[in-house]
Image 1 (cartoon, helix red, strand yellow):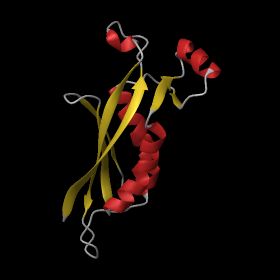
Image 2 (cartoon, helix red, strand yellow; image 1 turned 45 degrees about the vertical axis):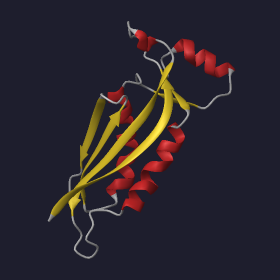
Image 3 (cartoon, helix red, strand yellow; image 1 turned 180 degrees about the horizontal axis):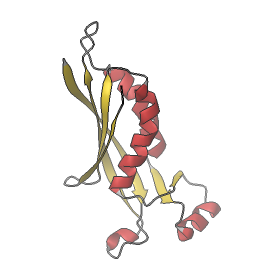
Image 4 (tube, one colour; image 1 turned 135 degrees about the vertical axis):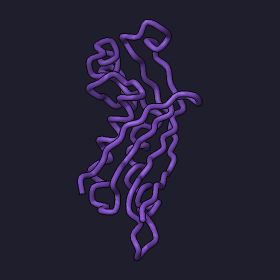
Length: 143
């Protein structure tokens, strides 16, 4: 038997999209909400796809790293120069900090930890940037 389970996480983070022609080229932030969804086989010995405590143990360190930080695209010379001169909590990534890319970035960090749970078949990260918008990134394990 298979099931889908999920756990939600929240954090505050700033970013900007230097290429954007609207307001998003400015420094701004969001109250991010993320749902990590796991699809898989229910283990007959535990009755679970995966323990929620294990999910939190894998995801929370990433959330803690991002919380109250600035996510900076490493090609954004203006902000790279600024952060080189100011000691602040910043995370550098090699892509624009769009919702789609952030979801993918987080998913890539989660795959190694979730791969050791053989009951997990699919891992989905749904990242809500606002109350009305989200992006998803998915990974299917070949088992």
